Image 1 (cartoon, one colour):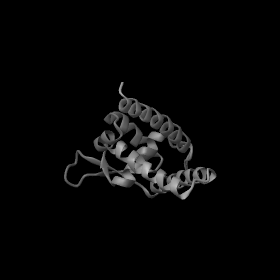
Image 2 (cartoon, one colour):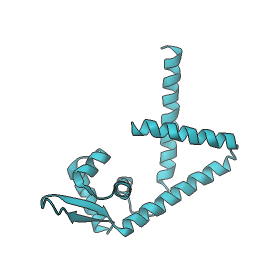
Image 3 (cartoon, helix red, strand yellow):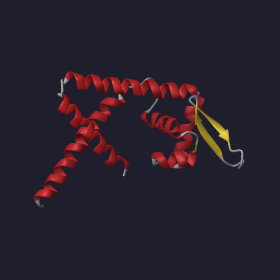
Length: 146
């Protein structure tokens, strides 16, 4: 491998390891212990995207339609989502987040942001280091959204 290739692979390895560790820490912060990560992801998707069909949700979460249907069933039973029939096509049903679901997403996001802010504060980064973290976050978002 050439030096640029070595740097690329080392960067990818470091990024993977630190991202997984941070994600694992943040996933522990949740407003409801009864809600799995997969169910939280469905709620977060609905909160950000609005009403979606099961197939659209499944595609966004990269799972099968039957898997998503089971997740929606559990969320509906918990009162966190509702099914809304399409006005145009009786065969089509949309999934919509309820106020209770929105509250759980908001509380979980708040807990995770607070936990991360506390962790950053404990490290007493300089203003320059904080700007570097923000720049890195923007670059990581580009990679994640590609």
